[in-house]
Amino acid sequence: MIVYYAIAVLVIALDQLTKWLVVKNMELREYIPLLDPYLGFLSHRNRGAAWGMLEGKMWLFYIVTIAVVAAIIYFFHTEGKKDRLLGISLMLLLGGAVGNFIDRLFRGEVVDFVSVLIPVINYDFPIFNVADAALTIAVVLILVHVLLDEKKKKKKGVS
Image (cartoon, rainbow, N blue to C red; front, side):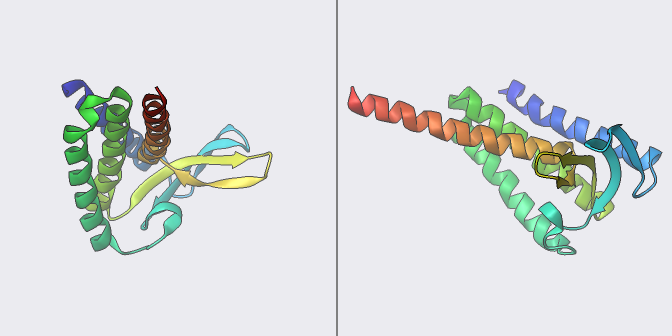
C-alpha cells in the first residue's frame, strides 16, 4: 500500500519542484522554446480551475479539493487496493489534486508552464503543469479501468 502512496508523493514533489523552478527562474509570461512553436515553457498563473474557469473562487476550490481528496483516499482503501490499475490511477489523481491545492493554499494561484501547440488543428492547448498532467493521465487510466472491468463482467456473464 505504501508504494501506491509513494506515487502520489512523487507527483506532488515533481509538481512542486517544477513550479518552484519556474517561479524562481522565469519572469511572468516569459517563454522558453523547446520545440518552437509546438512545445515550450511559458510562465503563467491561473487563479481559477481548468482553462481559467471560476477565477477567484478560492474558497470553492478549497472545499471541493478537500472533499475530493477524502473521496479518493476512501475509494482507494475500499476499491483501489484490489486493482493495480485503479490504485495507480487514484494515486495520480491524489497527487495532482494535492499539487494544485498546495499552490492555491500558499500562492493564491496555480503555477502553469507547459505550453503546447497542436499543429494538425492549429490548437493552442491551455497551459498546464505536472499536477494537471497527472490528473489527465489518471482520468484516462480510470476510463481504461472501467472499460476493462465492463469487458470482464460481460465475459463472466456469457461464460
